[in-house]
Length: 392
Image 1: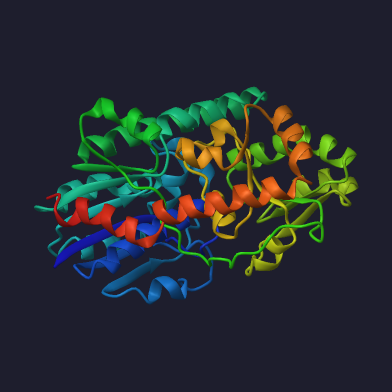
Image 2 (image 1 turned 45 degrees about the vertical axis):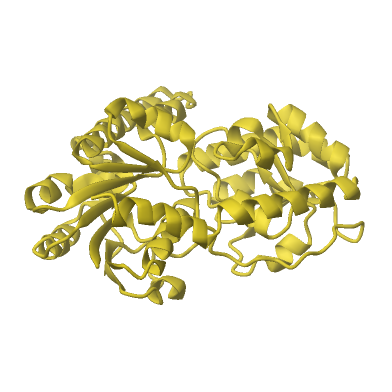
């Protein structure tokens, strides 16, 4: 029985954001092998308890510390980036010291933001191997995000934070025995470090919709799922709205946005409420899926695999996406989507296909078949078994 200490910056709960879903998928696959004991430590994202689907995992316990109250602005005086600084609290340090007093086969750093206490782990890890779960190529995407800001002070602050992320990522990679990436593109970024690299696609944990044909009874609506708390995701959202909305509006197509959206963004587009609908978080998405003719994957900032793509595919929704935003999918999977090279062309693609029910249904059926094979729990178990059960 392998013993694994899983260090998360934030616990992967509630299961709304992409990073939480990816982590929860790997944890579920590991627990399902029946050959590991897992201890997961991290900060709660809010005051809600850990999701029941995670609490029900066999031989898995969660050590949750209170949500961080550290003011992020103080990270400017630290060598840690804002997220890692905020999460490296004294409470977390004390809990981690106690856990490191036990013997572990693996210690996992889940996301770079979990690595604020890396020196502590290096000093106390004993014989444990270290694995880094890289949700993104932070040293690449953080500077790109900072460069999009025109305000010089904001841009300078974000560039400094991006540089600190790059250094933290580099230190974490050097300390690791294995690195897990979501996509082959990210694996290429980390290849220069000469570490053992593994690509684990996301493991889908959600509901699988029964087969149902899309027809004219569905409103002309395109769905955008997301959690827009991160600045990169907010920039993506505004860019998508600015470019796509005029064309959709002219053709009577609504854009439904589901997920947390800051009030200032909602206020900015209050006059578009007939075409642009902000729903906020929705616990049961089945009704939203049933009222949509397609799902949108159109982010240009932030990198990584877009978990919403799997929500759409397993809900049997056609996917309309940017070529660069569906990174991590295969050529066959992309052939079953409606793909465009840029947002202007994507708007045209939506308009051209929104009423082609034969093509909508053909694509969604093929995409469901392909994603079921590659992103199911069985595939995830095979991936983690090769790393954690035979890799050290």
